[in-house]
Length: 280
Image (cartoon, rainbow, N blue to C red; front, side, top):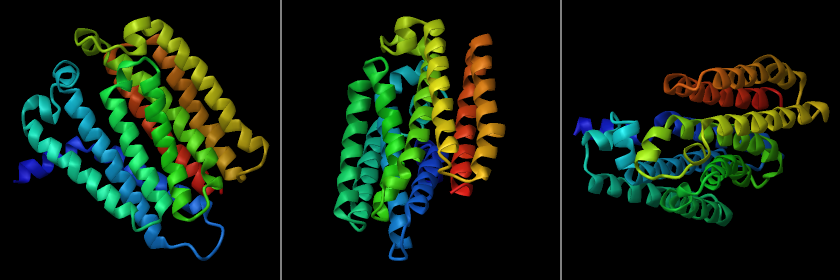
């Protein structure tokens, strides 16, 4: 029983879920404009968003089991730690919980959760086979977690920049993960941008997206939307890490380094969220 619980935790990607949970909370805090908000609804939004993400991760692993036998043989399903049927039941449980919890927030929240679940399902089933489109859908879904936090406090305007931040960094990270998975994707006829156009062209696209992302980061500083704390963290931590990332991926595209750079981007997202929170 303990091993099954452990497997459920791992297949749900706990680090990603924590990021999603915190993203919704941070977004909600940024969007609060009056004292009439409900802290309980914010927590419900964060939990339901985490369950949406968990369901998406689980279904993605079900769809990618053959690919993961090559790319990530140590994952739960390729190792046979739990059966596919058992994991499918977990998926439906997570979906049901996300619907149930979001229904206590407001109708808009429930509609967002249902829509996000459908989009993620279609992504794993179909969009993932289309270069860039699947990456775009994933990044858009992550970015919308911030909008969801705003909906929880009936004011989503303040979540627009955090949503853009999450969108860009996740779009870049999705391309990095595709580079990491190129070998297994080719063996299983999965068409991603790097498997179709090559790693060199993908790194050039990543460079362009990173440059655009840096411009996006500078805009709120120029417009003085956030305080100087935000500017300090962006200029001295977030942007330097992005520059290091770009230089490293162009000089070393080995699987080991790509895997490390994926973690660098994840760390940078956490730092960026801290900058937005502290600089509000």
